[in-house]
Amino acid sequence: MQKNKSEKYNKILNSAGAVFAEYGFYKATIAQIAARAGVADGTLYLYFKNKDDILYQFISFKTDVVFKKMNAAVEKGQNAEDKLRNLIRCHLEEFQNDKNMAIIFRSEVRYLRDIEPQIKDISKMYLDLLSDIIEQGQTEGSMRQDLFVGLVKRFILGAVEGVIGTWVSADGRYDLVSMADPLVDLYLTGVRGE
Image 1 (cartoon, rainbow, N blue to C red):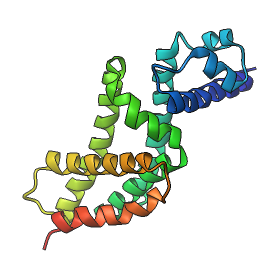
Image 2: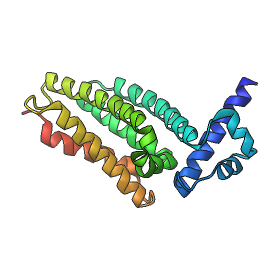
Image 3: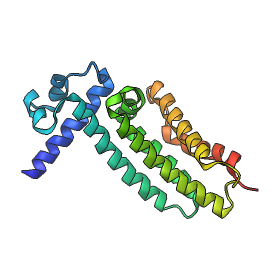
Image 4: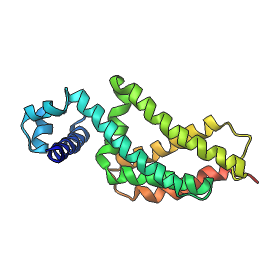
């Protein structure tokens, strides 16, 4: 019974992601989500309070999955540069593999005040990962020590979000992951120690 519940829950979440990406959060309806998931409208209320709760849980679920993968990718790095490359590559891979998630994070999430604290938490987790990598790079001597870590990590996050946004705007017509190494090379050109 628990397995069926979990399968149905995940199916509803994925269907909601597709509907939110296609119609936008405000225009999307419970009926559209239920139809896409192949369940009755009322079934959604067994798992979620309302449409806002569906979006909140969608973001929470996706964030948990993506951050587990990002942390594992970073752990595989031998040094700060490897860790940064692994983090950026994983970030871009996850969004390329789930275009609906990329669309929702780009076009919906930033404008919804009800989930603003959740987005701040997600950003903080990502920025904390970057801080650790940058500080390690500074200790190793591969990144300049005179740079303010807060500025560097926000520069990196902003650039990654910009690359994802451009990819979404281009309707995913090119390989997003191919941007990972050039992006990291761009960062390191400006932050590598001599």
